[in-house]
Image (cartoon, rainbow, N blue to C red; front, side):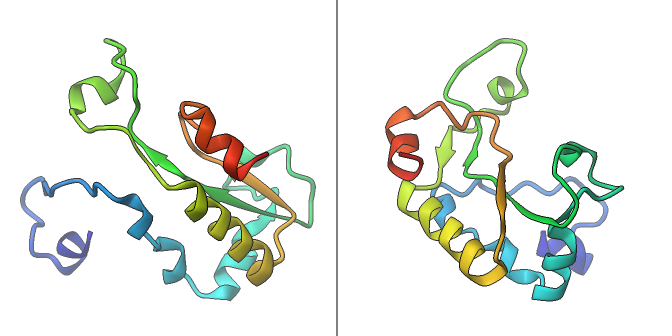
Length: 127
């Protein structure tokens, strides 16, 4: 992303190796607290996926996995060739605790396509 923003790769498609350990991703820390708090207030006219969130409820979204463990022929994950990767259960717990303690969120919205793919991991952070 930095190469695109800096203009180094503006004329072509940028390909980089995928991250094997997605526990290292901390993108939410880039945004300052004020912007995050105003974004969390639901419902927002630009965020139609959270239409069910009552007004004044602070909701955060989490993406805890990338890719898919299955090989469905109709899915983009099959032809991309990227393996299924997920945050560790402890990382998900840490992220939830961070969001609650720092931003006082009231609800979580999991953006994962395959949140339930690893039931053992799920039972650790959502007993």
